[in-house]
Length: 228
Image 1 (tube, one colour):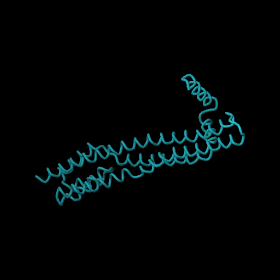
Image 2 (cartoon, helix red, strand yellow; image 1 turned 90 degrees about the vertical axis):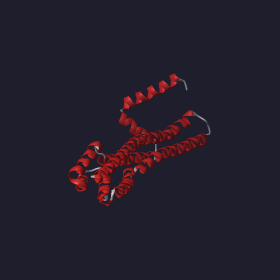
Image 3 (cartoon, helix red, strand yellow; image 1 turned 30 degrees about the vertical axis):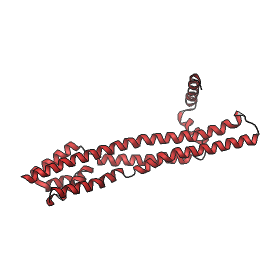
Image 4 (cartoon, rainbow, N blue to C red; image 1 turned 180 degrees about the vertical axis):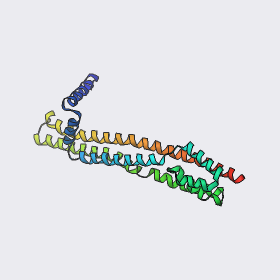
């Protein structure tokens, strides 16, 4: 296909959208796509549900790490481990939970506190990653549903050829167009969810990195406290 033909096709598509309205155009194409469009739409809706739930969870798990570690160190210096524990109890976020687990074992020694931080840190990482597998599943399922719908459409196109006993573009054009719609919607669904998935992974990595870095600072603060 030549470049001018591609530009012409894009211009025709834009003209269609402008003449009918974007929402009406999408509704028409969705209905034309057939039965496989509904599970693809379901994948998008449920996948986005997991995305927004995870965004809410990560927002609550995030804190200003530098400010919090300064507050914990001040509490250790002024009131000891008990004050630091109370501060963690009254603070939200993954880092506060990990610090709380470590400080509860601080009376058994710094090594015990460090082991508690490592153990609870692994649990907290699992909590942060919970639900991500479902988003990944819908990213994989949506294109496969689209491809399945395309295969079904191609089968119908060849059935039309067999029934008409002739190879005419008008005979196969409609079934093939319908078949390709499912692939298009499946890929668009996967792309949308993949963008959100990558965003969530980056946020999880940042929280985990902050958690590991601040845990080292807490252990150092406990060593300094025990020297006094």
